[in-house]
Length: 201
Ligand code: ADP
Image (cartoon, rainbow, N blue to C red; front, side):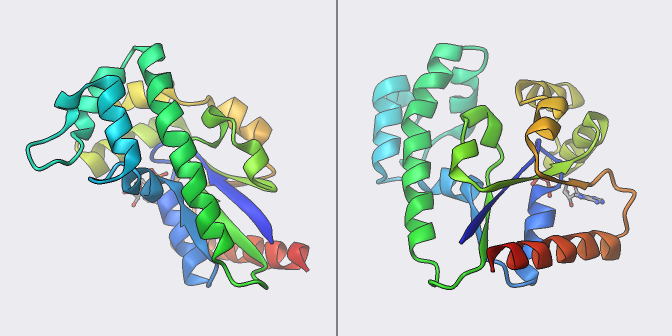
């Protein structure tokens, strides 16, 4: 089974593209969704985060205060690394579990991994598919999608791998700067889908 790692910066269009792959019947494993699952109440990673970074990160209902966590690791590399040392192995384990449950003759699987480069997970995938767009477009989209200030969006964009680094690591690129009509975007995904199925054969 071919493992395709779909990556790209925040707001580049990963969810949009992975939804099109799903419509074409490709199995998709989304590590962003898994990242939320592994810190749900009762999960060992949540208890570890509290031990390592503070029990006050829990809300009264026992769920993780994600905004408080972001503030606590913001601009503190040592804390951020401690957090990642807890969450990344938990995400990795669950991703492998999901992979193991796919039907035997699955041609390829799309692994959505936003921080593929930042986490150094290149070896988890056979090919890297990048969704790319200019940073100004990323910021515009995130501001309108999440209702945050442009400065905050820029901070998030700048904290991630650079566009150059991503483009260098990518095997395939979908340019999603917004100039393509939805039908063209779908056609681009269809061509990749056919290629990945062919390569798996
Ligand atoms: P990511 O998952 O990479 O953070 P999304 O797929 O959520 O990005 O896209 C960010 C926002 O931009 C969403 O609101 C989405 O609907 C919008 N968007 C993505 N691609 C396009 C496009 N080609 N044209 C217009 N809007 C787009």
